[in-house]
Image (cartoon, rainbow over all chains, first blue to last red):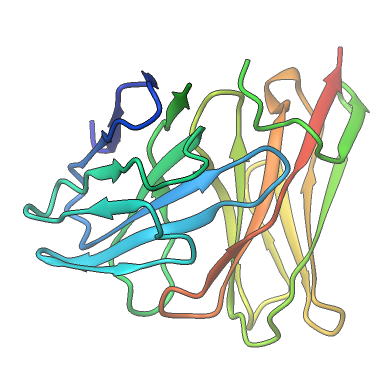
Length: 114
Length: 111
């Protein structure tokens, strides 16, 4: 089956700790994205990457970091600098950034920081 | 369940009736629009898309209407079923990463 996987589904961390969320795709897509979803709000873009070893900040990148060492993988690290990290995090991919293409989403990771 | 659906406008429909979900978009330069369905605790799923050179597109039980004059998009679901219960949101793509997602509408199907 082709698709995007995110793990784990639920993640709990203490304040002050960094945490890394996994995202893997086997769709052979060039572009990958990380979004944050909060109740009553639309998806907000954290980071995106259009190719291996390249990534760009989205609208709310502060307190987050990413890497893109492999085409299939785009992990997101939520650092202790992120002031309000508790949220539902969604990873997505698309064929390319260029032009207009549908984004395919993973199942999400719910992060709770206490 | 997850809190994605909290504080969203809710549309309640009787099973078997048609549903109409609306979305206003903001960027007159947007040329590609998508409707997503998100069930509780899951990632969004693609339902249907439409490009700006069209005003209507039909899928299986779903129709999307685009009115560029008033920047309005609607999703019509025919013969709504309990499995259609979810949050629905639109996305507009102005090209090269200018994607904006709406906040969503919660659809509740009453059996």
